[in-house]
Amino acid sequence: MEGYSHLGSMILVGEKVKTDLLNRLYQVIDSSTKEYKVGLSSLPIPGLTIRVLANNTQTIEKMFSEFHHIISKECFNKTPSLRKY
Image (cartoon, rainbow, N blue to C red):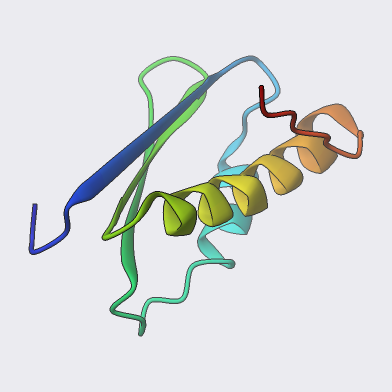
């Protein structure tokens, strides 16, 4: 896993997922950091997948929170609220 110990995956499927959303998500990725690596891919159906490699869960959660915020705003015009149980 390229020297990382943790992997997180997020899959988004829906008609509202467009190429411009994928481009918007690319903008929040710091490609110069060694703290994590992110891969974004479009699906053969309307949707995308996000993979994050890191050395701790908190880094992956932080990235997913940023992505979730953008997805909620762009696709659903909502302010996200994530709950942990």
